[in-house]
Image (cartoon, rainbow, N blue to C red; front, side, top):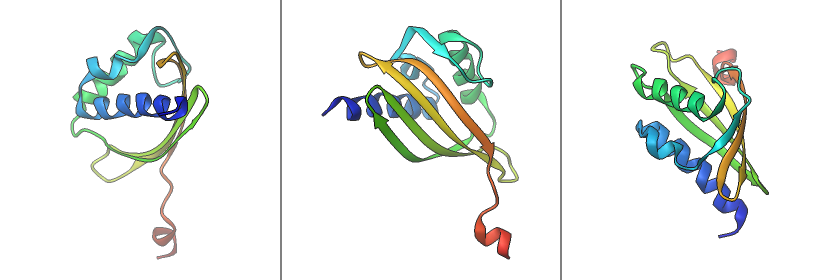
Length: 123
């Protein structure tokens, strides 16, 4: 397995553990000097832990479907769709992670409300 595939698997492992509500396992690959750039998450590893615990406690839990995962050197981008509301509304997001020596050291995200599907707009 090359470094890109390894890094992608580290990040997808975080997603899988977080979606199971297993916060300790999700945090295992996160470095102590982790830097959080998202406006939605408090700074540092503690902020990420708080965010993941809130995600695990959400009722109903959000449905998250990973659409793409791309790796380029030490960066991994994950595009996913999240549906959390009872009315089916949700968001589309891209999370970008930087890894160092197999550990997640930095995170950015871009989130937007999920647009209506083309068939929903036309009909």
